Length: 86
Figure 1 (tube, one colour):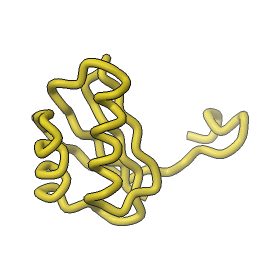
Figure 2: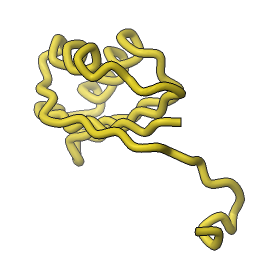
Figure 3: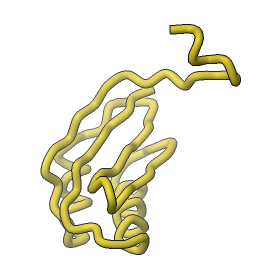
Figure 4: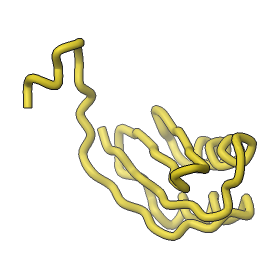
């Protein structure tokens, strides 16, 4: 899995987060997307790397501004003691 973190300016509330999440779901094939207006970021989990230009265009079209996009491999930790297996 790939974890993509997008820094987004302009989100002020939960409804803003919802608008960004919906735009991401419509533009890209994702497994999970969550946004935080407090952190000013959207975190996306997907099977394949996302096309950054399409992602940026989709979010900017909602009236918010993408300031950066970073991607990294993501491995879901399993079990209550998963933190012990580093």
